[in-house]
Amino acid sequence: MAPETGIPSYHHDLDKLLNDLQMCHRCPLGDTRIHVVPGAGNPHAEVMFIGEAPGKNEDEKGVPFVGAAGKLLDEQLARIGLARDEIYIANILKCRPPHNRDPHPEEIELCTPWLREQVKAVHPTVLVTLGNFATKFILQTNTGITRLRGTVQVTGPFRVIPTFHPAAAIYDRSKLGAIEEDFDLLKLLLDTDAKRAEERLEE
Ligand code: URA
Image 1 (cartoon, rainbow, N blue to C red):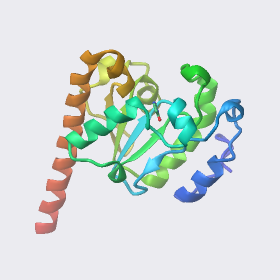
Image 2 (cartoon, helix red, strand yellow):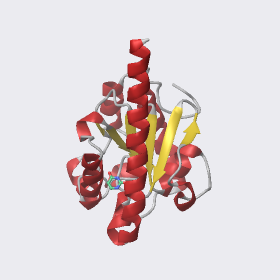
Image 3 (cartoon, protein in one colour):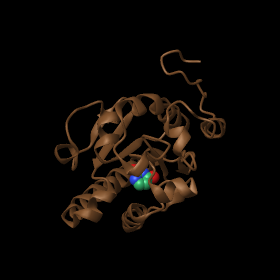
Image 4 (cartoon, helix red, strand yellow):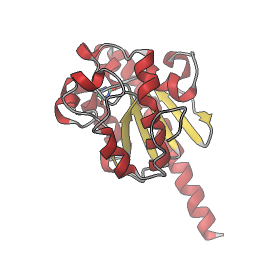
């Protein structure tokens, strides 16, 4: 047990982590959820998307981003040639906050040790943070998403692309252009990585 987080170290065992998460009652959201929404996708993904928290549809299905925001996410992924099974998607909170309210700081503190272990297990090189909660947590910053989007940030071994949460573009269509730019930036990063890897093979 890592005393500072209160959850075990999973030593990259994603299946065990996902299994243990099903029993989590570290915060009161464990009492109101229908399903835990641990995350989904390729367990060896290069790119991990991090959202905020499950909504109603996700709570009912136990799968992240299956509602309207998920549809927009899928459209953007398809536009840059990525499928869901090539990436991994997780959230800051694994259980739905009632009435989709914002996550509380103590919920973030209690839930994010799971995310940390999940990131270690999936071992991505790029994190795409969707919205303010994910961006502020991953970059440990108070700077808002409007200032940070459109850039590539670096934290530890990760390159981080902050972008608006897809739900924000549903209510404010003017944010869609910015999301498209940020997904284009992701594609550029991945294409450049692939080209470098190819060149290294040819050396
Ligand atoms: N919004 C999120 O942040 N995560 C989900 O899984 C669904 C909607």
